[in-house]
Length: 611
Ligand SMILES: O=P(O)(O)OC[C@H]1O[C@H](O)[C@H](O)[C@@H](O)[C@@H]1O
Image (cartoon, rainbow, N blue to C red; front, side, top):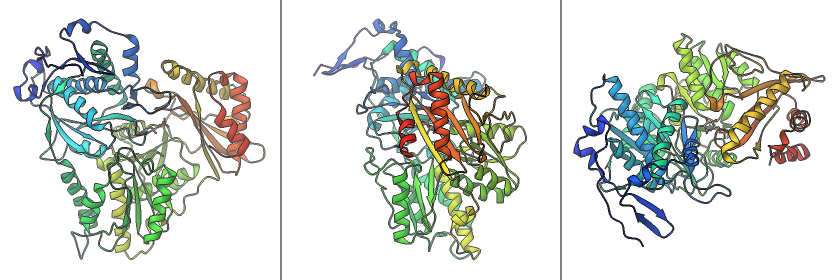
């Protein structure tokens, strides 16, 4: 093992760093190291490396941006993918965020120096969490921030740690890769104003890429660990208070869930606390709950309300226990799905419908923003209840930002929700929050019971019509990672040309500048989307026999180099006929099969099943 030594860094040059109090800065000493397979080598002359700027390395850090999040491979284990979210990358990103927060506060306070900038830091149970957190703390300390370790936490809790007193941190970081495999990790960033936008995260990545290119694999060694805080208990109390106040139970105010059995499936993610620290304390019986222990290898199933195994295990547990409700959280609890007392899964469109039913009672006539992969039945469901349905781009942040924009323009918009289960409410700081969605559902369930109804919450959506056929296909983009985005854009734009030029008979875009649509649409052509997700199109599809029977939505994936295609039809087998047209009249006819792996769509056409 090579010897290590530490050398104290010269003071940083930014004004905020010059004015740093020792308490912040003495959190760490810096040791420039380059990791090798044999250990670490120490460089005494760090400046030697500061001029090394390598385009490829810069690119690598920039590619970690996934819309408003950072996502990357943190440990080996994925075929064909190498580690790109290394401790050195994490340190550079956290440092860049810390600097960005300080700069923002200085601007807000008219260039006055800010001191004691406090940033909380939570994480999900991924096995890369502890080592990457240490790098995150070092980065924050390098920026001159005081870091506070929340330990195992959830994404909504991290945001709430910037608001709830006495914590009220200046900013927060959640380290998570949500439902992605155990090998990945990533970040979400918050200030009291909400989550950072994709543009802001792009800025952070640019800044971090320059730092990283100068230091490469060198990492600091944190000498003093950051202060540990128990925020999750305060957060759980906050959720309990909301339920107590809103149910306002006439007989037992403090235990409004007495008599209810509720199953939680936390998928071994961060959501177990909701069982013992929220539901149990409110009097619920949570016997039969599943996968509550955090386990960063996710041994049972992917923590994801879209996951079929997660939903079916929860369904079985609800039915076996005759429970009133089942809850499925994703890893970091910004998404959820539920199962009603009859064992019906309520996720995707059905969850949006459930929330829409609740919200439309509270706010008649409100607008509801969703991504454009929702069913025609959902639009009908919302409009039948007097609401307006705005279909928008995929990506939770796009959906939320559209809602914020509509409110600013004077259009009351209370619910913004993606089919992935990300849902945000105006009343809850426009935060996508799986725990809050469940809190709303539970309150409604208890209220219904108090009003004398024995029907479960599933009864609220019994009029929702499901599509007869619904399929998602993915086609890998055949390209080196750095060219994949450009190639993906080329494919999607080619599709647009084919539809607009009439090569696909019966396929048509509706342009819908104001985003009020009930049918197919070319999603939002009028405003300026962020480059990354500019190209998403939904075409309505008709044939001679059935008239207009469905739609196809095409875009490139945010996380992986593939093209995602969603199709729905009111006719059994309608998706299969769309897939045939897509393959023969577009992909093969345009030569796009040169840059697309078409094996999945071919298998689907052959077998009628998606594998
Ligand atoms: O592009 P994909 O791989 O389908 O992933 C798309 C999804 O990525 C993340 O999970 C985001 O949080 C979602 O808002 C988005 O819908």
